[in-house]
Length: 372
Image 1 (cartoon, one colour):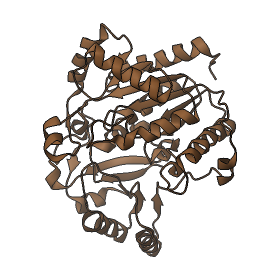
Image 2 (cartoon, helix red, strand yellow):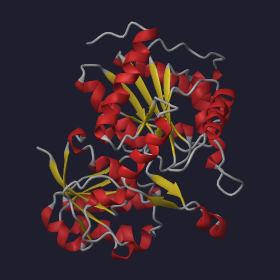
Image 3 (tube, helix red, strand yellow):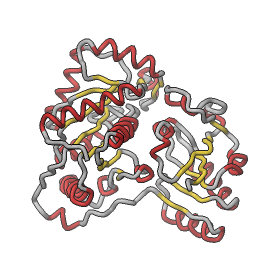
């Protein structure tokens, strides 16, 4: 049976998960809780991401919500929330009430030990979705070899964060599986195992390896997935952006995108953009940037529903976003559609189906991709 689960602190980063609840293997979402000061209380959780209502209202009283669940899922937050002051006390409270704890947070080892001890005392479990996929052996970094991946590969990239990349990954996964394909996948979040696929590997974040070693390790990581799972297609979601936005917002200089593109070559790719007005010159510049920096062509585009707050960026030097609704994205897409046929709004269910069909047609043109 699925465990009745509440989410804390609910925020826009977790919105794609609520749109794909059927893909969660063991969790039944009983409610979502956000701090009062975030302005989400009483709203439909779907409104956070600018999409359709999903029938789950955002609550603020964490203690009351504990009565309706078996498990609490503590998640990362786009909004700054001090762990010691706000999150850890709620973990302790939940454990004392006999609730299981699942976490996607990066937590210090000594705190993890305390949480595990408390859970053992109350006979509940603690599960962390960090450090789950360190299964590539160091020995591979000494081999000067990039192995060929014969399975078709799809890249999902974003111009920067908050471009609906994870929504794309979940949507095309569901559609491929619905059509009978066997999908292997590496996602851009650290909790992808909840959906039955791999998170972006932790060795890519590690300081233990050089950047060139990470490229070889990632190549071997994908090769082992191909060997062990024998999929029809491999979908790779790449965290972060492809290049700096300006001197204040560097997107970590697109290092992940560069390293992954050196480790494996995509057969087809999609780049998701922030919500903005784009001229033909803008689009060509972005596509050429990917082509000459990363070494492959962008096949299609998605327009996300988050716009950069340029005034706030100028004032604070920090990246802030303004969320717009899906209808606004559709209007923006229509303006570009006359010039670029392969442009999508992944929040539109029809577009999610059309995007998957596009990928299948592209892969079928170059590979003998067969139904399972």
